[in-house]
Image (cartoon, rainbow, N blue to C red):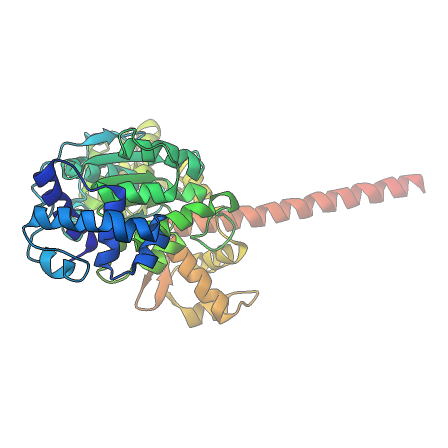
Length: 450
């Protein structure tokens, strides 16, 4: 049994007996007893004096809890007593009156596909009671839409639902100044991480933080924060490691370091790397009135890896330039332009120079490559350790595909990167031509002067 389940049992019993929830200090005592902490350690964690805990509130709390449960309860037998009960919030059908702040959540009244992903996230959030979940994927893949849809479907399982976008990079203090008062219904105005943790333990909350990548550092390995936002990483690590009964759902173009470190197996911290949705892509093509054979529709979806935003952009171009004919568009063989290029520009510009070099060589080869083959090709040469570090970083950014020790890129990414190389080469040639013309001009001036 997890602590949050024990807390739910104790809270429910006390509420039923004396019509109130456990107080902050009572939760601190319960947490300490559950984790076999000494009163010294409980005092250190909670900020309350040892005398107050051990001689005042402690005896009163154990008496209240004993009366509520109908058994004599103390620090030593707490586990044995509470394991006889079932947590009242473990029923996934439970309907809880919710306080909801949807913030900037997008409208998902029209939503296609993602059945498998919705089922997995529901399992993680409700049955497995994960504390921290990251939805990671390329720009436009549908992370925010999926987060909004799941949150709407599960909102009645929570007492509080809170959505905020980090797109404008609010400071942590700004976020906490909104979040803590909301979860406490105005009882608490302290914008502190420990206060947030307290309310996440006290109530069953779903907190969605969209666009986490906005506060992550560009031009370096993926997953690390800009200097002004490192306290976010400390917060997420705390929320992933500490026991509470709530769920924090993040969306990001790249996996953050604390998620990568804490996730694993069936733990309380997990990440879902979002790929394109075939069902959603077909529905999008139909809704935009595009015309073509099934094979042409499949080719279009596969080239853009079923990325909803990319397909929306290209659907607009197909309508305006080719009267909605997919076949005519495909014949042009110019599939990376305008909005598609800008979408990938934003992600490519975040890479370190070494990551960009690896992307160039993967695109040039076009085929699945082993680490050894890639290292042998790259010029100038890089160390094996640096290559592994960059490949992991590019995987966190969802910019490369990997299977059985081999790596490649999505078709649209390959074409984009090749286009970048061509543009760079053309720029160099243009500079060389300009320099040549300048030298010729200087030569002519010199000859004229002579």
